[in-house]
Amino acid sequence: MPITSATTTTGSSSGTADAILLELVDEDGVTIGTAEKLAAHQPPGQLHRAFSVFLFDEHGRLLLQRRALGKYHSPGVWSNTCCGHPYPGEAPFAAAARRTFEELGVSPSLLAEAGTVRYNHPDPASGLVEQEYNHLFVGMVQSPLRPDPQEVGDTAFVTPAELAERHAKDTFSSWFLTVLDAARPAVRELTGPSAGW
Image (cartoon, rainbow, N blue to C red):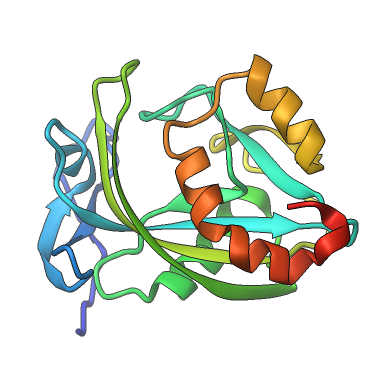
């Protein structure tokens, strides 16, 4: 569907950011409308399109990011390489590549679709709700990272064992294990049996 603008201006002169619109979908992932980003996450949440990216290095280690402390949702927690929402009318694949570059300063050298997963994850800390129809992507990263500090607080490449150790002691996003488990078949195909995913 042709959309000329992905944002609407708030009209404020005090420097408030433009309102970001998300694509609302039905249970089959068919677009049914749009909603402002924060409104879509207010309880009980509106089902919307999202994406999650899992990038690996040449050793089969997963790139994690710790979300910046200034994020409105799940600040300071560890999560998958990149996640977000396509603009209305934007292909999930294009959105995944765009946001990976915006957040981490790299373009994946390989990016492949890895299915979809639908979930409902309330976030106890913020009171917001993730009602998402999530498009999954796996790929490779072979360039040095240049994270945007407004988006990313820290990064780490981890093996499955290192991830288990980190997950036991650090706080992760409420959706992390759901999206990782859904992406595992594609992750195993990408990284091979020796990586252990």
